[in-house]
Image 1: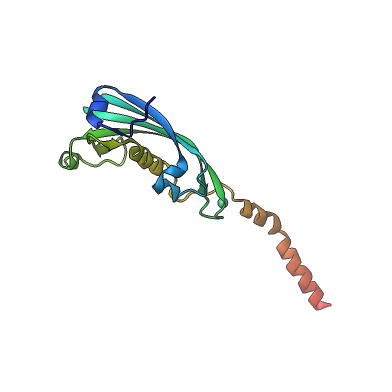
Image 2: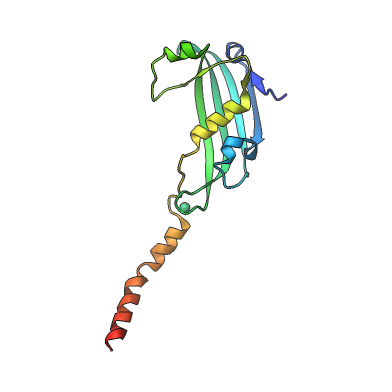
Length: 164
Ligand SMILES: [Zn+2]
């Protein structure tokens, strides 16, 4: 499949077009800042939908295995990216601004005739990656848990030793 770098949003939606591809995670400059290493590949699939909730729309799926940094122990944190978004298309900022903002539901974007595919992909990936990722249980914390019970005894022993 030839790689399309940009799509005409409304045209893509109306025709029900599809495209998919993959790119190394390290090639996304904004995502790269959140990664410990450039390991991993982002896979994406974009599909045009002529009518969703009265609007032309795009469905965008992204997936991949990334290495983030745990914000507690600063260690590597494997992250399985798997996200799907629905983007409702609007002609311009004015039309978009007239729609009430909802916290839930599809995202809304201004469609252009030259929408950069990898830009859309990167936006979606950044939304899906946790802002402050953490291990459920950090390795260093486990070490703490193992050594912690010994500390009171160590202190006691020193106290006893001091009395003698
Ligand atoms: Zn951690």
